[in-house]
Amino acid sequence: MTDTPGESTARAVRVLLADDQSMVREALATLLGLEADIEVVAQVGRGDEVVGAARGCGPDVAVLDIEMPGMTGIEAAAELRAALPGVKVVIVTTFGRPGYLRRAMESGADAFLVKDAPAAQLADAVRRVLRGERVIDPTLAAAALAEGADPLTGREREVLRAAADGSVNADIARRLRLSEGTVRNYLSTAIQKTGARNRAEAVGIAREKGWL
Image: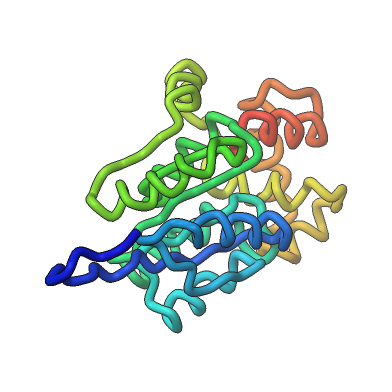
């Protein structure tokens, strides 16, 4: 796009990308970089690197994957909103799970898209959130309404996530600094709420729903 003589050139939208899959991250950076009004100013591969990178590069918009080491994109979005409230957040994910959408919106995300959406849709979402709009994949929005609210509390979710690798109650208690009895109670409640028969099944159901 060329500038008309006498017209001032608007500053490009500065974007931070966070995705643990380097090929996906670089592909997104390349596609967004083709847009004349968008500039990718930083890339990170871990959720716990998002806030630090944002402080360093001053993005307008952060595009965050959900499943990353160190911290999920949803958790990173909440931290980023607290640390740098002016930065808009676009969540992208391979898994279009209704529970993810609800949690992303609760964390302060401004947009939620699935990765198989056209690249032009992501670029459009970046522009729209900067204008103050909220952008949500319509199919996911309908599914989230039909699914209902996430029944798990934050603590139940944390304990269930810690149990996902097969850890015994004592290990979970030590890791989360809780008593074994408290861990057992949280797991029992999580199993009941998910309608599962055991903790492994509860983890599977919660993941499928997007609650973890």
